[in-house]
Structure formats: structure tokens, C-alpha cells
Amino acid sequence: MGQSYDAVIVGAGFSGLYMLHRLRQQGLTARVFEAGTGVGGTWYWNRYPGARVDIESQEYSYSFSPELDAEWVWSERYASQPELLKYLNHVADRFGLRDGIQFETRVTAAHFDEASNRWTVTTDRGETITARYCVMATGVLSVPNEPAFPGKDSFQGPSWHTGRWPHEGVDFTGQRVAVIGTGSSAIQSIPQIAAQADHVTIFQRTPNFSVPAHNGPPDPTVVADWTANREQYRREARETGFGIRMVDGRETLASEEDEATRRAVYEARWQVGGFALLGAYGDLTSDLDANATAVAFVADKIRGIVKDPATAEKLVPKTFPIGAKRLCVDTGYYDTFNRDNVSLVDLNDEPLVEIVPTGVRTAAATYEADAIVYAIGFDAMTGALGKIDIRGRGGAVLKEAWAAGPRTYLGLMVAGFPNLFIVTGPGSPSVLCNMAVAIEQHVEWISDCIAWMGQRQLGAIEATEAAQDEWVAHVNEVAEPTIFPHANSWYLGANVPGKPRVFMPYIGGFPVYRDKCNEVAAAGYQGFALTSDARL
Ligand code: NA7
Image 1 (cartoon, helix red, strand yellow):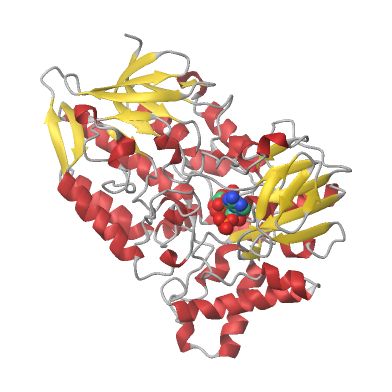
Image 2 (cartoon, rainbow, N blue to C red):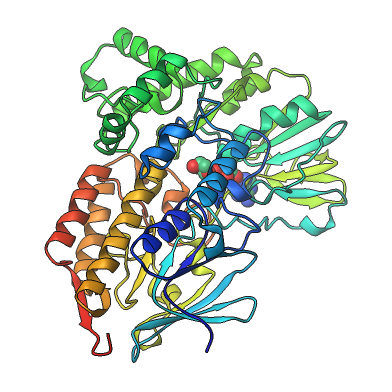
């Protein structure tokens, strides 16, 4: 038997780094396993041109250390991938975390042993490690969808998935580039690729809503204000439904204002940029008619920016409410379609048939390409857990337990899988919250729980089936009346053929969720079964 730890942590992104730091602060031993060669998670893998966060930098960062907060200076309003990676590397060094992380190591299996109340974790290097706790800090958008297009391997040029971009970058100069997909990754990268390439052909299945970031150096006034009031603003962010203070969500209802006022409100928020638009009215995520007023506003914006009316019309989303898929935040996306070297192919008019050696063939034509960019998204929220052979009590297989969709208690634990924690798992706010806020709350709840267990010499904690059933029902119940089920989004697993259609994140709002987690803990971990361990 190999090494033994109090906890094994899988993943060295935002979650895994803070988890390691917290557990070490509590005097526990922990080992992080990370498949990449460095820290950063999402920001390690997603190196495509234009990759940047869609929440303002100062809010999309750790708040647990006032010193870290005070010393780090962001150079852009929306930090780019390189800067976020630099930040996370700084965090790893500042808190001395690197010696606790084993890189280039993928966890392949985690099996729970009922006799010892411990997990046995196996890696792709053939190591076996045991730990009382196993924390899955595996990320929600970390397993790229494989391009399953017929003929894919026949393509004679290079191709990349945006989520597995080469570290040395790609020079598109003089090239004809095909980009498949129009999600956030495509919307961020297309303007940059188009500025370099000879020609870019974009293959669109579903147009997305995108709003301008108005990115640039941070406004010094905003920075000064944030610096002077940081702790208060961090607290205020945690009291908003989505964990983002700058969105400035209003209670006013769109359905109760006249058209001219609404237009003015939307316009002001379009000028602010980012998710501010969705904060314009309190009923945008709950009332389809109210939502339609924002849809109409953005549609007009697209028609105003894109000069060719036929292209503009193809770019206007018509099949789902705004916000029901994650809103994209761009820099010059729609303007890019006014360039001579950019063309849009609507896959609804001419379905993609196959990849051929020289490019992409649709039902109508073959589009020659020297390189293909697959911006086709991820097996979100459950993908990374599904890739690990996770077995709980009685050898129960997590993948089988979740065959009809993920079931958790609070998104944190799964009945039948004692001492296994998930950071920002399905059933928690996760992607419907500022991830930095959601991650800190989860890491702190988990580490507090582990400390509590240690103080009482308890061997195992496990969600009860009853508590899990109740929570799953609640997660569905709050999602049902909202706009979210009205889009074929990755929130529902709808982007992966064969994946059960279940709304995975918790839409009840971050403060409601956090209070529930705190109440559960204060009541002695209500809804969890606790097992003592005579050997402790
Ligand atoms: P997304 O948002 O899932 O976007 C993937 C895009 O790829 C989307 O436009 C898809 O169209 C398209 N897609 C996927 N499969 C196909 C096939 N088979 N044929 C044609 N087009 C396809 O992923 P991103 O990486 O852009 O963004 C993920 C998140 O990262 C984002 O929400 C932000 O939170 C950051 P579809 O809409 O399914 O018709």
C-alpha cells in the first residue's frame, strides 16, 4: 500500500489550491493530483486566443486573504487567461502549495473501503494512495467534448479544441481557418483569429447572445473605490444571487415599465457591459415575456452592428431566452462579421456532413481550410467525475448512481459515497454564481466539516438518501418556473448526445444556498449520517 494522507484532492485549479491551503492550515496532510504540468485548472487548459474571464477581475479572485487581495493588481477590467494563470501561480507560491501537488498525474480510480472508512486512490502512474477524505476539485468545464464529426481524422491540417490549446500558441497568419461552434470560447477567439488569418469560416449551429465587455485597463476610480471598501464589497457580492456585486441587480420588473424606459435601461447597461444587462430587471430570469424585451433589445443591437442584413439575421438568437444559456461577454464579436475575411455558415441551412482532408463539407458545399478550431464545449459539471472510477459503499459506482442524472445533497456529497466531497458539484450554485465566491464557500464548508469530524473522532460522514432526495427535488422545483429549462444548454447536459436532461446547477441564489449549508452544519450536519471510528 502506498502513501497515506488525511485527504486527497483531485485538481489544482481555483478549488484545489484553496482546499490544500485550508487543510494544511488545519494541520492536516493532503496531496493534490493534477493532470496538467502546472496549476490553474480552467486557466491552465483554456489558452485559446482571447480567453478571458467574464466577471470583473477584482471580483473573480480569492477573498480569503486580505494580504493577497491587497498586493495583487489586475491590469485589465476582465483579466486574460495569461494573467489569471499568473495569479494562480502567485497564489501557489505565496502560500507554499507546490510541494503538496503532484503534476502530470491523473486520478483514475477512487474506491471507498468500509472497514477503514478510507478512500484508496489510484493514479495513471500506477500509484495507490489512501486517505480518509477525497475532495473532487475537478472543475465544471474541464472535460472537452470530443469532436465526433465523420472524417475528422482525415483532415490534413492541424486542429485544436479550444479547451486543449497548445502552450506555444498558434500562428494563423496566411491561413484559412474553420471554427466550429459559437459558444463563449468561439466568441472570444474569433475576433483575434480573424485579425490574423487569411480567412475565417464560422460554422454556427445555434447563435448565442453576446454583450460587449468594454474591456481595457481598470478604471482608476473603480479600483480606488474597491480598494477602500474591499471587505464590504466582498460581503455585498456574497449577498447577491449570482455572487457578483458589479451586476447591480434591480428588483424592478420589466413587465411593469414602458418600452421607452426599458430601452433606456438596457442601453445604459449595454454601455456598462458584461452581465450588467441581466441585472436590469428582477423578472428577466423568471418571466419569458419580460425576457423577450431584453431579447428584442439585443437583437436590434446585432442588426445595428452587423452590416450585411442576411448575416445579422443568422446571428440573432431566436430559439431560447437571453440568459438561459450563459451570456457571452465579447470584445468585437459582432463587428468581426463586417470584415471581408470572415464568413458565417448556418448549419441549420446546410448541416455539417463531414470533415474532409481539405476542410469542412456541409450539405451545400465544401469549405477549404488549413486549420480547424473545435470550439464545441465541454461535458459540463459531471464530465470529470464520470472519467474517474468512483466506488462508494458496497462497491456502488458513481456513474451508475448518476445514470439518470446527478444526485447530490447540497452539491457537496452523494449518498452511498462517504467522505467524498465535490467542490461546486451539481446541485450547488456553481456556474450560476461567481465561481470564485462559490468555490471559497464550498472549500470553507468542507474544511470546517473535516475539522468538526476530527474533533469528534468521527470516521465517516455521508449524505442520507432522504436528505438527498429532498435536495434534488428542491433543485428541480426552483429551476422549473425559470427561463433556464427553455434552452438546450450545457446546464441541462443538452450539449452532449445521450446525457440525461437534468438541470444541474442550483438556481435558488447563492445567499439562500449558503445559509442552508450553514444551517445544516450548525445543526450537527443535518441530513448526513455520521459514523464513529473506534481507531481514531
Ligand atoms: P459552449 O458554450 O458549450 O459552446 C459550444 C458551441 O459548439 C455551441 O455553439 C454549440 O452549438 C457548438 N457545437 C457543439 N457541438 C457541435 C456540433 N456537433 N456541431 C456543430 N456545433 C456544435 O462551449 P464554450 O467552450 O464556448 O463555452 C463554455 C463555457 O465556458 C461558457 O459558457 C462560459 O461559461 C465559459 P449548440 O449551441 O449546442 O447548438
